[in-house]
Image (cartoon, rainbow, N blue to C red; front, side, top):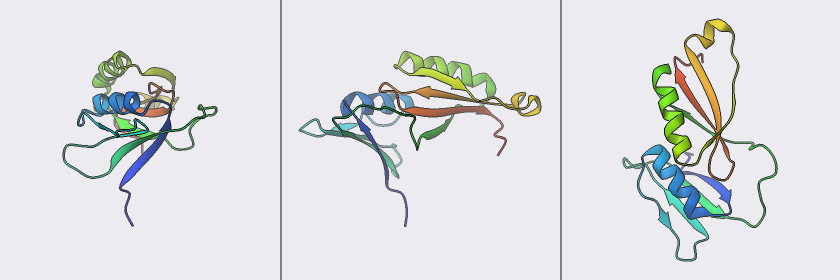
Length: 126
């Protein structure tokens, strides 16, 4: 078995696919003719993101979220600013013991519909 895609429920599949396409620097995304679904794919192929329109809104923290990496600690702040310019907002930052925090940060953000995702920078403690 292998993962082929991650599906995200949302109100506006085109908008969420556009955000993730730009955030990940992937393709421009595809939107179904009905507008009820969209996807974005990495240029090199492999697992992709799929967005499906649902009537209900998000009411609690996601049980599954994407974990992303910005690179070095110095690159993390620039990447957060870039994502905010695309519509992301900061939710909170994970706290670590000082010896880990000196070399790694992990910031939790919301995408354009409030779905959480992590953005780490530096040397991962795990």
